[in-house]
Length: 199
Length: 199
DNA sequence: GTACCTACCAAACGTTTGTTATGTACGTCC
DNA sequence: GGACGTACATAACAAACGTTTGGTAGGTAC
Image (cartoon, rainbow over all chains, first blue to last red):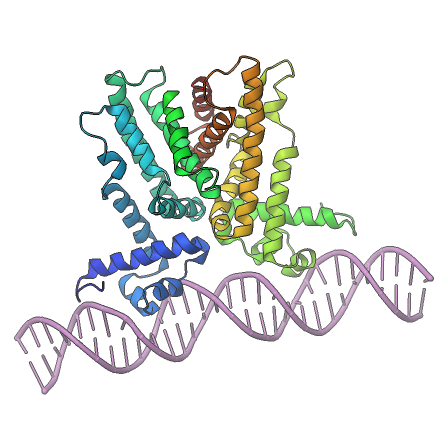
């Protein structure tokens, strides 16, 4: 649990995991150093040892969350074999964004919550804009692949299709977070599939 | 500018307009009573005269913003004459949600910013959920009308189409706020039209 | 004129917050 | 063993915040 002494990065990761838990539970308005320290059964002195200030602590935690999202095992995508085409990959990646699992809910809660701070802080805003641009580029590649394989029709450019798909899932995230009973996982999946059918 | 003495409601509206300006400029993390009072060239005593506490001040301002959105002149919808069908009305209402004008940007900035607080506060969350449910119901009615008039095809239920459309525009709002240069108004409109063509 | 109400102002209060300063304990190296 | 660095804890500090308190001014009714 507690990293070996001297394992600086592991300690920073532990702090970030505590930040995520506080964010998912209390939102950005509830993110205080004391709350994060309490989550670790530690004092704020621990936090200030590893991060120069609150802003750096938050930026690192968001960056790490993003990297974890990008690098972690992909339940949806893993069920997509390499024999499947671009459309199935596209579907899997979009499914992976949705809050279909408790972890998915928590992660999305943090990202949606981050938008208020990000829309005010130019650095955070730039990070977010870059993050979503990269996501659109990934989707664009998958759309292009599906197009080549004859799995997606349409006249719109692959960039427009990707931007539209990202819009759809981001908005569905928001709706599902606010109305989980009305947007259970099965309905989210069905809405996405209907959307893909319209492409 | 300053309402007649005794015009209690007008004064509360003035306060709310100041709250909106602070929210649009500084986000929810920057919403302090001192900031709102400064926006009015007044003291916080004025605010506490009209609202029992900060929470009531915010709730009222969000409610009033919603009501203003619902009641204000509709540039997009007004260009839709009654001879137009449900599809045109649906399009107009969806266009009206998008941040296509400076006011639209400001309003959406406030709503997107409100999500962090709302996802933590059960009362705010319930307000938001009800608000978005009502919006889906309105969209559902328009989809049904367009269906009857043969303007929209498809096999999905009108509720699913409405939920999908709301997802699309909410997500497009987020993307446009974070990347206004990549999502200028014309592109937003085009993306929406492409989306409607896929229904 | 007096009493009461409304509309604010200014200051104080109590609490919370991020940050800084100081200290102890432990491990490593010479 | 001493010096140094790392890893925290604790306490204090300064600032900010929402709320409360006490006050003045103006308007209205009797």
